[in-house]
Length: 161
Image 1 (cartoon, rainbow, N blue to C red):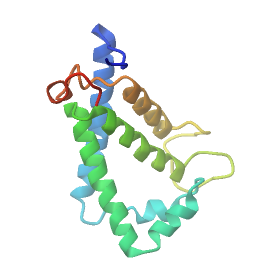
Image 2 (image 1 turned 90 degrees about the horizontal axis):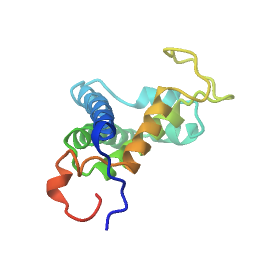
Image 3 (image 1 turned 60 degrees about the vertical axis):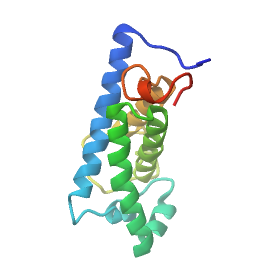
Image 4 (image 1 turned 45 degrees about the vertical axis):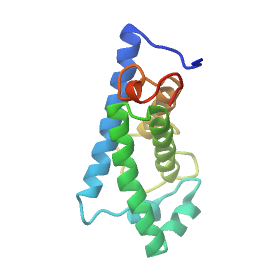
C-alpha cells in the first residue's frame, strides 16, 4: 500500500514541471563541469565561509580528496539531473539532490557572521536561491512524480522509489 500522495491534474503537472526545471539545472551544471577541463571545486571550497568551512578547507587541502570531490560534483549533478528529468529513481534523486544543494548552501550561506567577499547576484540574509532550490527538492521528495510521469512507472509496481 502506497503512502505517497497521488497528485492529479494541474498539481501533478506543476510538480513535474518543477522536477524537470530543477533536473535541467542540475544536469546542465554537471555537464558544464564535465566538459570544462579547467573546472575544479577548489576555489569554492577554499573560499567557503559557512558553518562547515573547516570541512571544506580540509577537502581542498589534499589533491586526492579534491579529485574525489570534483568527480562526485560533476557526476552527482549530471546523474541526479538526468534521473529527475527522466523520472528514474525520483525519490532517491531528489533526496541526493537536496543533500548536494545543502552542501552548496552551507559552503556559502548568507548567515550573520559568515560574510564572504564572493560576489552575489543580490542582497541575501539567510534565504537565497540555493536554499529555495533545497526546499523545492524536499517538496519533490515528499511528492514524487516519477511513478505518474516518468520511467519509475515502468520500473516499480506497488512501492515508492
